[in-house]
Amino acid sequence: MADIRPVKTLTKDIRKLTRASFERYGFAYGELLNQWAEIAGPELANVSAPERIRWPRGTAKDKMGGTLVIRVEPGHGLTIQHDKQRIIDRINGYYGYAAVADLKVMQGKLPADARKRTQPPPTEPDESRLEQLEAKLHEIGDDKLKGALRRLGKGALSKSRNPAGGEDNQG
Image (cartoon, rainbow, N blue to C red; front, top):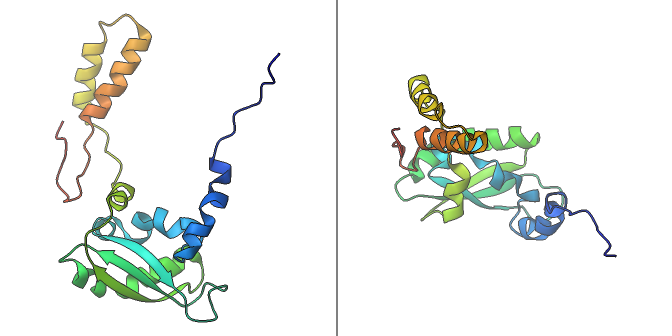
């Protein structure tokens, strides 16, 4: 008889797997990368992404007083530079200590995965659209099919923002 073992997920081991890579670029556990939209705010996060933190000599172990290097979409560097101190304050507030002392802006195209991390979640469709959806689903007898169509309908009716700030789906 085969030995059956429970399936293990990677989530509990993800920090171990990514630690060396993230620390190489100055991101302890990648928190800054993953929380960039929350830290910088959605407007800035849509046009910027953290590249790395450069630590002063001899302080790499302490992770204090680093210079955050941010890649910024062309034409948005001045906005980031203007909000430099606010960004530094928000990062240090997130970490709870003075992790970052300075900010360096590099203009260039953002990596594709940076855009995915900064997209705001879609908003709920308005009530009148949901009522219309429910009216159409009322006639379907199969509960599993009805549930699947309800989820599909809600997703299709949800409004989501594209990176330029316009609406992708008007419903």
